[in-house]
Amino acid sequence: YLVLRLFTALFGLNAVTLRLFSVLGVLSTIILGYFTGQRIFGKKGAIYFCLMLISLPMLAVYSHQARMYTWAAFSITGVFFYSYLFMKSGKNHDLLLLFTFTLIAMYIHYYSMVAAAVANLCVLLHLLRTKNKKWLHHLFSLLSAALLFLPWLSMFIIQVKRVQHAYWVPEVSFTTILHCFAIPFTEQFWTTGYSIAMVILLYGLIFFTVFKSHKKSFSEFRLILWRSLYIFIGTLLVATIISVFSQSILFSRYVVPIVTMLVIPPTILLIQIKLKWLKLILISLILFLGIRISVPTFSFSYGPYKQTVEYITANYPGIRKILHITEHTAGPLVEYTGNSGLSHYWLKAEMSNVDAFPQVHQYKQPGEFLEPGEVYCAVRFNNLDLNEDNLDRVLSESELVKKDTVRDNKVEHGLIMIQLYLLKYKGSQPNGNSESTDLKNNN
Image (cartoon, rainbow, N blue to C red):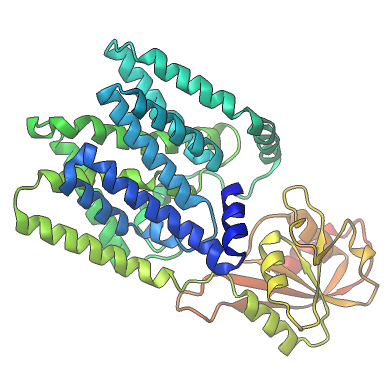
């Protein structure tokens, strides 16, 4: 976030620069894969690795979103490469870069922090098992990274305490676990025959590589193969354990930091294949499927925000006040308000805040900005079960005039919807919560 602020300060704050920073995360990962990858895979192998990265739909999807995920993937790719190189070479230069990428991963995202911990644990255990004296150097680097994480520790503790009470991630299930394994090769919010084919193809190649790894010809890459799988599966395992015994944090989007680990086995297999025609067919097929899956996602919209503003002003001209249930609608609708005459309001919630948007008026009670008999519109993002208490309260204190839905018409797969509740405020009714459920579900 701090680097993004610096980037936008230098090049301007707009949609292009915000998204460009994420694109640079992917490009940096590819560059890292090519130059550092040559020390592991050789020149041809590094090219294969880069081609596999280009074919990853998940990286493509998040390359044009103003989020930290592509840089998290970059950090874990660096952790993975230099953890392996340090185990093989024992050079302090490799250890220093491993330390640097580990620290970056710790600060970028908690999933990348877990992945870095898993990777470094593998390194430490390997050094101890092989009685390599460099284990002391590595342990010192880990303690140094932990020490440099202390400035963020207080915020980390605060965030952990907050999610103990409520969090938007659904409970862990077999479906959520399966989704975490499948989503790297799909369109994220829907699946097609292309993505199903890619899931089957890539996991087929992964399983085949694992099966062949016991052969002598694979001995050179056996360590790096298993390390990549340890990081991917180990990170998801830690997240699953936390989800089962504490608060659910297992969510498919969080796979992005470790997604590059899934292209390590196919890269190794391509290196091992001797038949050029077979290698060419596999690379062409993977690239075709990956690009075919990725291209439609570039036009995908996370919500009909501008369309919602236009829809309300055109169909409900009497509405002037918009009450946001979650911050998912607050910022974008404010951005597209323009000269529509709409004003935006927010009921303060424990798990959300909109302090970043000064145009949103924040209150504790609906009666602080609504008069009895006043008609207004409450907006809710696609059945998002967040701040449900606020929604129940608003519905219990209002008469439902109409419930409407705005679907995204910009893309074919307009799965994201914004729900509109046209309401007439009645006033505070402390015992009205039983009525709110009926209003919420009323069509």
